[in-house]
Image (cartoon, rainbow, N blue to C red; front, top):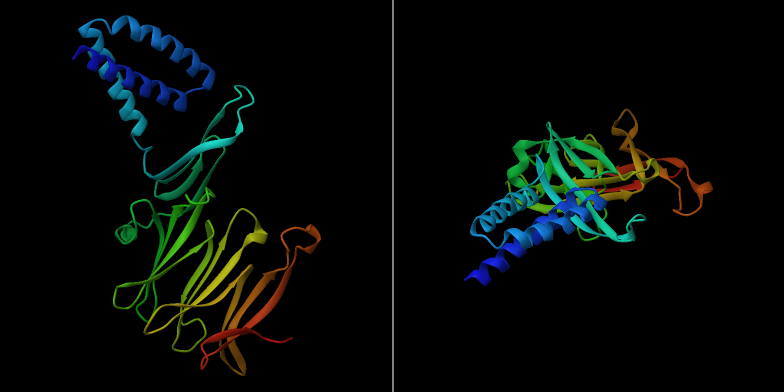
Length: 282
């Protein structure tokens, strides 16, 4: 029995020490942990000492596992770059949280970004590890929910997930876009009876802006009409001799050569019979 208790207390002490390493300065943590084990060896010999250690350890474990205020999700992994002071690889974390009504993405001691305003009414429509920032409805009855989530698979920060709920209330499809939402429009954007969703998202730099446009049909799943490295411009509903469609500024950057960065204005015309968009010839 005593051996079992000793092992239990030692394991808890180890957990508290690990927690301290994560929370404190690494040099202070090393000194603390060395002293910690000397203290543990002394006080574990008494029943009162074991109770004290157990109580402190439980408090420490609770603090370690508790989420920061408003935390939605957290993802941590070992850094590939050793700490220049200690020579050891540290922990890299990213945190998604709701702070004072805003959804935020944080990399502790590196950066903190506001993703958008928290949409509490749509939280029940997404997993608890996601935070909704838009809850939209189209003229034809579609409901569009945009939420922020951590991209755990690629360890590539946060992304946005679009959920398409049909007029019957059932989820029809999902789509993932870049981290920040620069613009979103839903409605009969081309002047006819068709519901259209247009989204502009971005990741880090202006030349990373992405434009996605979907047709929201009366029946079936949404149909993607455009996915390109571009920013949204003005929509045309047709009439007065003009064609329905949308202006976009397409990025010409090839991803390698800086001299290729630039924007080209294009008009994409809407064909209501074919339900398609195509660039209009200049």
